[in-house]
Length: 136
Image 1 (cartoon, helix red, strand yellow):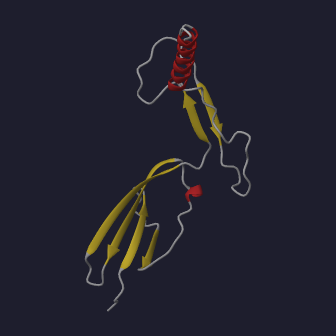
Image 2: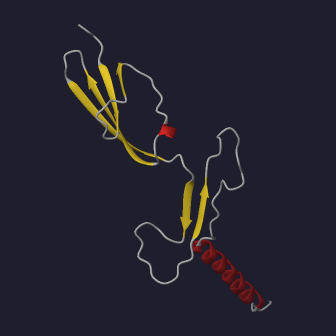
Image 3: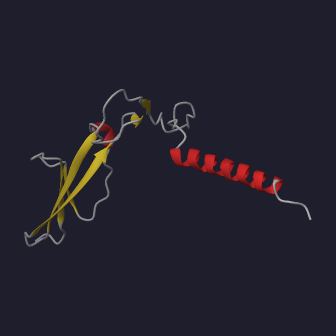
């Protein structure tokens, strides 16, 4: 009688297992062979007495270039003309870092504009009140 548990690994909704191993195992899942999007890793374990356990791990693959969009959000209600800024960038060959195109430009946030305007307003108020203070 076998004393080790076995592990069967399925990917997505496949009926044919990705692999069948004796526990414990170490293996590498190469996501470069998967299409971008949502996937499920289903792991079925069997102990020596035939009892089964299952664990499902959902994950998302994004090997292709990342797409960043500024100007519209998911499920947003919009009308009229909408200015959009779209950037797509890949990871390169992951052996050297590429600066050009690796960052997504963003517009200046509105809270920063409000802070700058508030600070300038406070400075003008302070200057006016300091100049109108009578000397003793």
